[in-house]
Amino acid sequence: MKINFILTISILCLNINFYAQPVLNAVNFPKNYSTEHYRVKNPTNLTPGGSESNQTWDFSSISETSLIRTINLVDVSTIPYSSSFPQANLCLKYTNVGSSNSDYVYYKQSSTLFETQGFTDGNSYFVYAINPLTIFEFPYTFNKVINDTKQNSNQSNLDTSVSKYDAYGTIITPFGTFNNVIRVKSNQNPNYTIYDWYTTDPHTYIMTLVVDEKKSNNNEAFIYKEITSLEISKNQKDNTISIYPNPASSQINIQIPNFLIIDKVVLLDIIGKVLITKLQNTNQLDVENLPKGVYIIQAYSGGSKLEQKFIKN
Figure 1 (cartoon, rainbow, N blue to C red):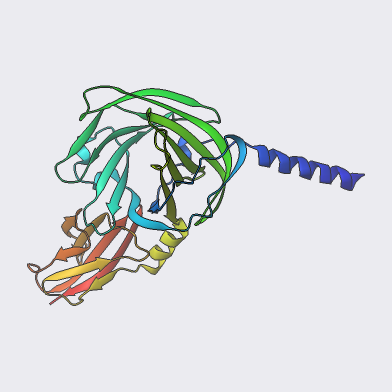
Figure 2: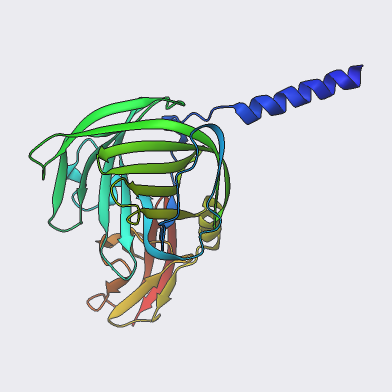
């Protein structure tokens, strides 16, 4: 009888866990985040699948994808023109494949809200959120609906947005199986419905499906492959930066492992005095005017910092 009682309790616990509804809170947002963003080729036959609780969305049949950009969570203070977005405390950096330039999307996160603040290409183009769009309200629970309006500085009219946490469960992509995933269904344009899948703890992107309600052959789909915190930790432990040529006389090239994007490069002298800080085209640094000697390069990626010495001859 005692054994049966224990087994019954165990089964009940398993069932409770299975039916538990994932909840997203502000504390679930990671401090370090890097991911690769892939476009799905020929997504015409993909459908969003079921809604409600304990769904299984199987997209493992996706066979053709192309890497289009990397996305990094970066320190707002290190980003060009961050002072133009004084309310922002979180920023995602988007770097397209084959490009040395990046776009930056700014957000404001509090204990109760997550909302947009604006966009810049890091050069001269700015979009400000005159009326910010609320993306999440915390705690973000199953069946929560957010009705909001938004207006950016490049718009003359208000847009209406409706989003709903409409389902949760397990999603399978070519990059793995993810449990306790939430799905958000949103409409900012009457012609399109957007489905986003996220993990909740930590909060990360898994997949996006854009359904064209007018043309069935015009859908778009994107999947994300996270560069895990374990990989980042290994990079920090190895303290590996590739600097070449080393020694150098005019220009050095800088690379860090696992395709991480460099957000900022700092050059210091041997006693730690900052000589150069660079936020754009961070894979190259002009050192021609430096005196001969030993210097330190610090490379920042997300919340990670790696450093290496090089010799100027």
